[in-house]
Image (spheres, rainbow, N blue to C red):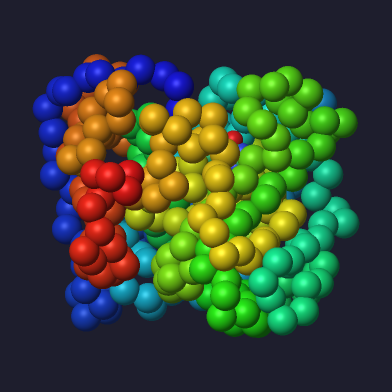
Length: 331
Ligand code: MTE
């Protein structure tokens, strides 16, 4: 979030998003690519496990079965980021500010037992066990493009179900206009929380219609397995048309509120991070351009960059949510 990224190298257009008809026609290609990706992922997973073993904490993640999503926009055909890159280049400030810190240090995160407290403007505020929450929707695999505000991107096969399934289940009151996501902040197990880097806990938020959008994923796994700790185990949010920081990790509380919540990065640096944080190539971060991005795994810092797409390429699915809004003001 706080690095400088001023390069404006050459740009690469992304391969176009496919329609569901084309998705059907290219199913063989998807399967071919997926099996190649899975093989690479398997090797990367092995490397990762070895790295954990060297750090003294062997990690073997459980498989999380899921069906491929048929939702429009949910299965990009772009090349997957390797599991190794996606699990060793992370932002999770509760475990340090270096990209390699979470993979090294997040093994201390205690994910069982885990519960999610649903509070605020709902019919019956309740604390739910994670095991129960996991049954409220059918697990789907969705391949989403992820764009970090710092200027890099990845393509990740997530597993989860639409956040809307949970919201419908807990029955928010009509007065609920926003959803706030509060994440774990335990100084005992999270070394970053012992420092004052941001005002803990890390809090994110969405407008109710954004949270209800079918692409907003309540996420329990990736690459066919449950979430690794460094990626926000055991449950996180993934909102693919927004900058990565909107996807809060290790959620412990979901609060329905009337007023727009003060979310962590807007609180820490209001001139740099707004509530909406939609991926928008024409609204620069005050300290760098957002017009292009570097895809992790596609070469080094000096390699060609890709052109960043409006709403991260999900414009057809989500632009209507913002019709009539000034997106420069509401950044
Ligand atoms: N969630 C919590 N609790 N703490 C964090 O520091 N970082 C955010 C987001 N969610 C963060 C968080 C940022 S800046 C990004 S880019 C993404 O997580 C990174 O997710 P990934 O490591 O799975 O790619």
